[in-house]
Length: 266
Ligand SMILES: Nc1nc2c(ncn2[C@@H]2O[C@H](COP(=O)(O)OP(=O)(O)OP(=O)(O)O)[C@@H](O)[C@H]2O)c(=O)[nH]1
Image (cartoon, rainbow, N blue to C red; front, side, top):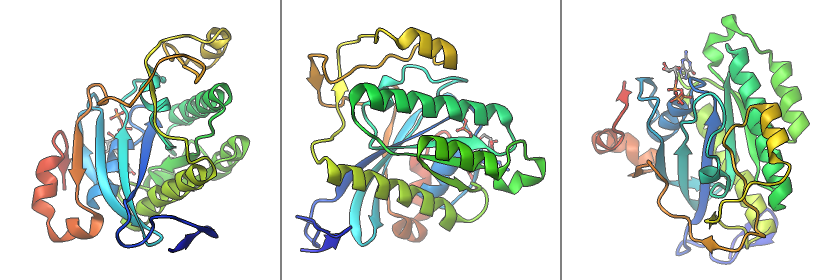
């Protein structure tokens, strides 16, 4: 039996079932969520995309010598969080993305972090979030300083990174793997935490003022006190695509590319 983070882990040997981690990528339209997701999955940068596609990808990863079955939901909210339940109750970790050359996207990322903090409070379920400033290659057009990113992340107690989807794959991979580590820590603290889909829609009493304040229109939260719990169903309007691990992809690029419909990959 191997030891991760000082705790013996049942089932972490070679025969073990991979740890399942659901990761949702949040952020304003154009921040680079899809580009980062595809970069992580294929090591490639995309320049054309369908902004209305919301895809959930599945990738077999190895993080700290442990197999991980990682599902990545590349969300497609418009300018503000909408119908958030689909990811709030599904994800074990969130990547909140803004673009360093867009003040608007930074403001949106703040709204997303507020939303996550509120949801954590209401459900008493802490889900780690990482704040990510993307498009570092556009640093000459910066509208958001690194210090502002650090400060926002500090306010919400999350890790912070600046990356570029069109530069090094390793930096992007590092961020995704950090998200897995954060999720794993949380899962080890409370192993009963697992993705749930809660079917009953019920707005919280104080939801309206907060959503109004932060522009979180049409987000509904459901707490564990609501009665009807179900397994997470297929994500609405999402394709689930299995992608080979990064290592396998580099050897077998063609099959991977045919799976990632909706993107033009270079
Ligand atoms: N220069 C640069 N451009 C990027 C980077 N990441 C994404 N882009 C470009 O920014 C635009 C938006 O990227 P997407 O990945 O589609 O952004 P998104 O957040 O998924 O946006 P939606 O799909 O509309 O939700 C595209 O033209 C990308 O090619 C980056 O790191 N650097």
